Amino acid sequence: MHSVDSSKRAIELTERNAALTGLEDKHAAYAQDVFTFMKASEEQYDLIVLDPPAFAKHLSARHNALMGYKRLNAAGLRRIAPGGILFTFSCSQVVSRELFQGAVLAAAIEAGRQVRVLHHLTQPADHPVSLFHPEGEYLKGLVLAVE
Image (cartoon, rainbow, N blue to C red):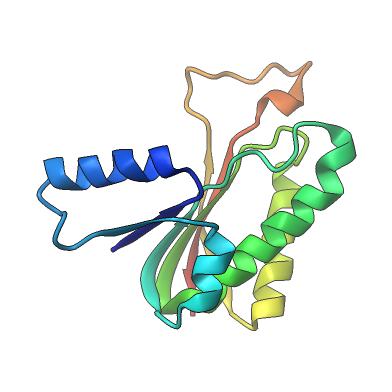
């Protein structure tokens, strides 16, 4: 089991949590860029969770965010074993569910992987979305079966 985050503090908390749950012998944590980590590794995983920070906080950054989601998901799809499950998320309010799913589709095509959507995820009920502010549906996620 591996955890990768560019934040050293996040990795310290992850290691502490692994120790509290008795998983420290089965867990390795890396404070580095996830793209660097995945490029250097040949390991295949049965389960991957991609949960980046918001790639776009403003409409002007949306295109670059979509390219980032495509790049991140393509890297994840290259590292997942056949039959694996990929959880992928976006918390960029200017990236709609459709655009996010399109970026993931482009990543699957680029990685040459067959992917099925098992679930669409969103923020919990205590974060309702106003019909007058659809961008309030900031959190979107997909649970994917990867062949």
